[in-house]
Length: 234
Image (tube, rainbow, N blue to C red; front, side, top):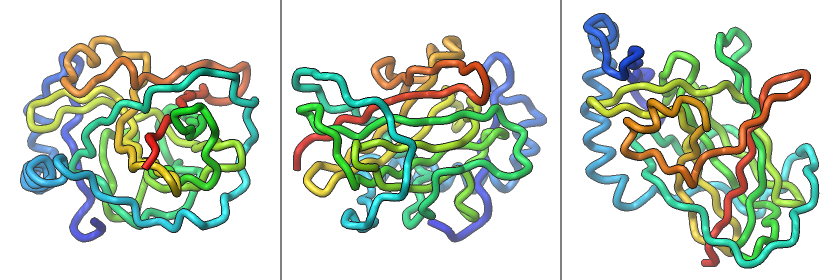
């Protein structure tokens, strides 16, 4: 979905409701959002769009993580709505940050595993999110991209912390959309959330506490958010 103008959401004020200025500023972008939003929720929510990437593609170099600890069978990661802003054919990249961004930098990393807790190398993981202004970019593929997991099922993305926003009157907590699939697994479409901002969690009907990342500060550098995705067998 690359046609059309950059899509704007309406940033929420402190109480979660858009101000009059927010609505006026959204302008035509808001009208496009309404039409696209209803179309998305009416169609794409029922059948998540498939991934179109070659699962036999070689995995790019990634930072190795510690071995997966021994574990029993794991429940598959909860699914969540795709939303109306998915765009296929995103670039292969690990750094979502724009050179002139004003956001709070973040490293998102983890693994893609099967239900027996085995890593899935070469799985595709496709991520998209709002930028520091709570906007989705469907024109230049800003803050969206895909990569293939490494030998231990690992992935890593440098990005910024997404902002909460209001869409069609609904408050959305900061979140990242994710699609993940291995060569022999079902497609997972979900969203992951952050432990901060409990107030917006309470107002977001799509918030799921089982999809919250482990967010930790570092002595130097940006905080690190970790989440492992568990995929069902095909």
